[in-house]
Length: 281
Image (cartoon, rainbow, N blue to C red):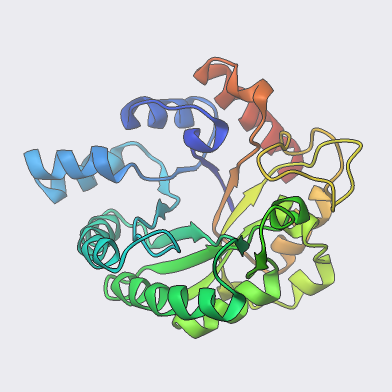
């Protein structure tokens, strides 16, 4: 596994060249791709130029977000149109050596029953997965664990590791899991359960920590802490399990922390790197 940076996951933004500089400065081995920045470079110069520029950064490609409009609120027309853009993204990403794409799955709905929700999104996700597969890309689906989020909505949907793996299996052989330590904790998934997942089913990993003083049923989705900050999540056990499974992909911090968000972008990258070094050690 390798240290991977995504400034957006820290609540910050910067142009991709600046983000790459921060990643190198603070000891990250990889970075998620900004396909807007790289696509503009490829259009102005060439795909080879974009590939050479990124190779010169010395960073590994982490992943790229799946831009397909496949969710409940997206029209059929919007979904169909988005597949063209997804194909362009996947082609460029693959040319740059990046073969991991990911998205998150809403765990509940106010309007769709479980069956209706599945019937809508599973065929869409399957088609998006095929577009990615055509370019040699894997597709990670993230389950969202907090019970507090489902409590606000009428109908439950996929919100556990087993359930998202079942959805993944129904969507294609290149589809697996975006595993988030916070969601694993809030879904009460054990490390033993994680250890039984084939490592090839884990596409991408997020790490973070829970808010002190809250149990798994009390945690709030967008209110977390820096990885290793509170000890609510057994991050040492989580990392050790992934190591034992021989997971070799990106590990990205996604803390949704107000304290990190108000830092300067450079301080946020430095703090994240040091925190991630501690838990990886």
